[in-house]
Amino acid sequence: MTSDPDQDRIDERAHLLPEELSVGSDDPEAQAEAILAESDERVLDPEGTQAKSTQTPGG
Image (cartoon, rainbow, N blue to C red):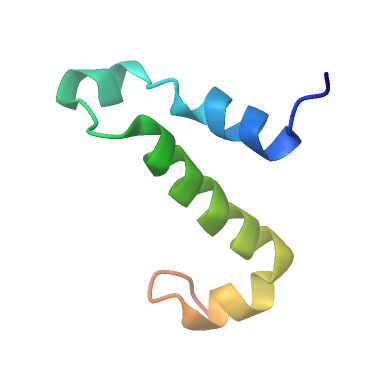
């Protein structure tokens, strides 16, 4: 049986960091999925996400 690489990434990120554990999470897996989706968007379209950012100079 092969595992789904995307699900593996979500499962790995769903393990909360100590800072996250201290405040808790209602749904670590959904949180991980959202974080990874946003990260993938930035990686796949760095110019587009930089242009949309209010935090990145040059946008």
